[in-house]
Length: 171
Image 1 (cartoon, rainbow, N blue to C red):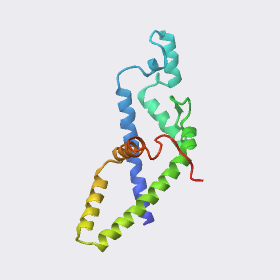
Image 2: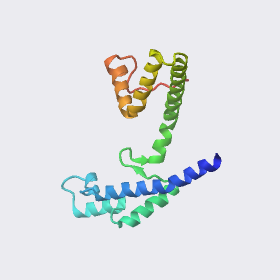
Image 3: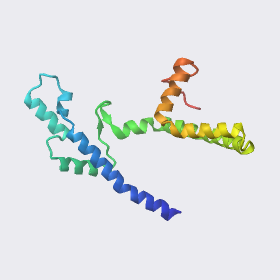
Image 4: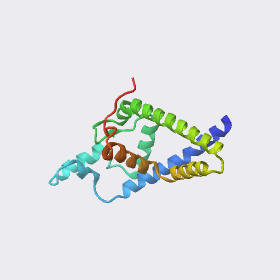
């Protein structure tokens, strides 16, 4: 089993490299000048050149891609342009909340899944079994992001049971 997992992890590395190369390339092909986003419309050519140098946009595509891979292997994900700080710091700051919500979602899904499975097994071939199988099929078919948006709208906006943007720790 460990060999199987190791093979899968090693096989995913070329896929991740290819996806990152395609993404990087598509961003490079997008028309417009990223440096102009950081300056006013009437910025001088010298100011644009300075921003391009700071962002590394004056380097060739393959050099920038190689530098990005090297920094990625060193654990440097760069600076967030929105937050104006390290991306790693921003991720680490939000990681405890993400992990606690993930753990809660896992527990709820296991409890609901086991309960639905027991009902479907006990009522095999009956209406309850068909209902559980239909709900399971619907649950597998709906994209998670869409279900999340609908649930937020339902329990935070339509029937305001929970707030939409607050987080209160479990402890």
